[in-house]
Image (cartoon, rainbow over all chains, first blue to last red; front, top):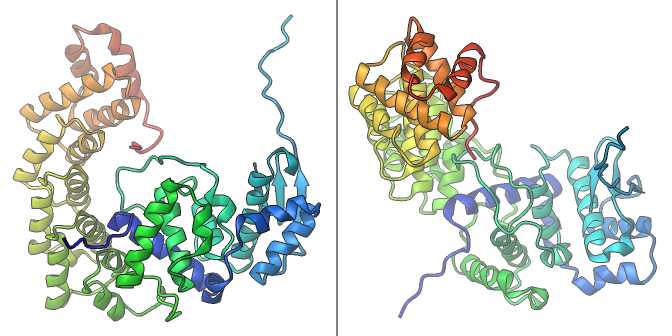
Length: 88
Length: 356
């Protein structure tokens, strides 16, 4: 029996995604779509090798061939919601 | 777990990385890719969805693949409105397709990183990867590396005629004219309005409306005739969209008004909206339609659907000399709704009805 291959998205969604990917490629260059795919262990290895967040950002920037040295990094813990008025 | 702040060119995490290393690292990656897009002046809003597509496309998506941020996304009823239908993040199906594109762009039929994916993502990704290798059917062509978005109109018209539904959709969205259509162009548009593919029909309706708003003669007899027929289509989105377009082009005729009357009884909110929108564009309506509107108005009151209540109230003010007396009469058996109804009469609706 012959089965026609189909994408996993309906036409309208496929069009929307293809369009955005073309937009991205025209913006950052098609060559960046040929960069090696970094596996999960490589990325998580950044954390387990005790790299600082700035070093991690630099690593990702190097992968992308993008100057990430100007990116700042901060941790701002989320405040717990204030549920009570404290009243009276 | 955090965000990229373009103003300060910074990545802000709302928890320490070691609280969830995988999510934290994915957020850092996402931040750097956001920065890449902004620094390269991405043409359009850098939505979370666009950033995630870029993450996967640049080979940094393997952490993201393990994070289920969005199982199922809501969508706007009008699927042609890409600018307001932007998703919060990629859902599983879209993420799977983006991964397929990433592998296809690298000419990798059996990427090793697929083994890290769970089944929900892996199977649809592999289906799309097979499809892409077999058909090359994508607007994005990584091997040709052609910039297409600024291509001249004649090339968009050519693309709108090729045998690929998704590429047709993109091309149709880019069609423009400020003069009469050639016979060939008109025939193509009519074919698209007649297509068995709903995505093509919907985008053709949207494009006809856009072009005709800029250059009125586009809405000629043949095109408007087709739109009127589509207003009675069995597909709820097509019928609602066609009705809204016929209304905006001020081409309602007796038959379309009858169709709009039936829409007021629909089970779908966007279809009711399309019918009500058609009537609200008229200065007066026949008595039998007023009765249908009254029923829809009462249903909106009962459902506490204040957006619709506001839209109907606005229409009553347009049609009736004394809308307050009409509502008092209409709601004499349900006085509990009268204050809300009268309040709606005295206040302009805050916004256009949104239909999620």
